[in-house]
Image (cartoon, rainbow, N blue to C red; front, side, top):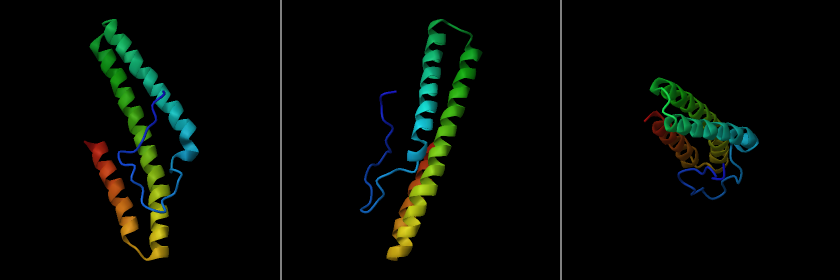
Length: 115
């Protein structure tokens, strides 16, 4: 996979950490995403070879489950890293908006995942 995964918004607040919550697991995420990428190519091959539709749908479901697992992992990493960091910074600066912004960002991401 040559395309980098980036968040929908790259506007980080001043003083935001330069590492992401998933940085420690980056290699594992990339491995999983490459596996998913291979599964998608496999489905395209199945369609090209006119395989049975239920078999194709089974593979689509497997990919959806794998992407869901990646999404939940990234969300957990975001909460454990970015939201916790914002809470600590909020406490240190007395600015409650810092943590509230990160919580709203996480809630919006959850909403997008549920659509």
